[in-house]
Image 1 (cartoon, one colour):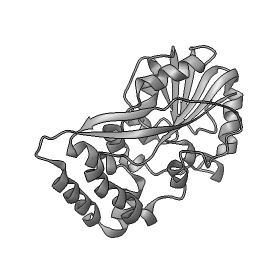
Image 2: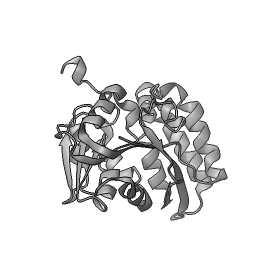
Image 3: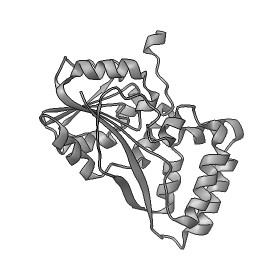
Image 4: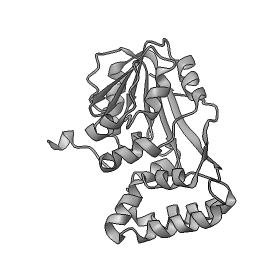
Amino acid sequence: MTPAERFKDHFSDVAAAYAAHRPSYPPGLGDFLARLAPAKRLAWDAGCGSGQLSLLLAGVFERVVATDASPEQISQAARHPGVEYRCGRAEASGLPERVADVATAAQAAHWFDLPAYYAEVRRVVRPGGVVALISYGVVTAGPDLDAVIQPFYREVLARYWPPERRHVDAGYRSLPFPFDELDAPPFEIRLDWRLEDLVGYVGTWSAVWALEQAAGPGPFATFRRELEARWGTPPAVRAVRWPLALRVGRV
């Protein structure tokens, strides 16, 4: 693999867990993007992972091409007749020129070579089409659980987060965005989860994997015990949420 073809791969080793535990996006997000798009023929979802956003887009666009540089992620993606998964980098989609009505990147743009990705967006998206970068930060689950989650995220894991994570914490406002930016309404992911769901999700964080490589399973086990002590009697279900951050522009 040449230097130009390398990508920052933090998730191939946890692809199955990523597919099982990463949350899906709210239906209103797909409807919002479809209203902005000049047509609903084709959406290109770059850095698609295991297809959480790709499946949502398939409900409102005739065809979705979903690309990810990790073959392990693609192999775990949920299949849908309207989604064509391809293994490929965001900077080289393999799509023809000016065919996409919308280009999306959900929880992925901070890993891209952004100038090259933006050049690919301009090549692939038809004039008047839409580009949308979507992210969500640390999960919130109520004051009692946040008192465990926040210190783990910001203190225990602080030295293990890749530097690109700062862009997620900033809601992607720290990324260059050379398009005519459009206003977006507030969206959030909201789910009712059991303890195992939340623990499984946190286990997909790249910093957790790095922590376990450096210090073993002890710190994450401690985090789990602290959560469990506050969770409530099984099978208690708790409301968890992630406010979304969007950068949406006209190409």
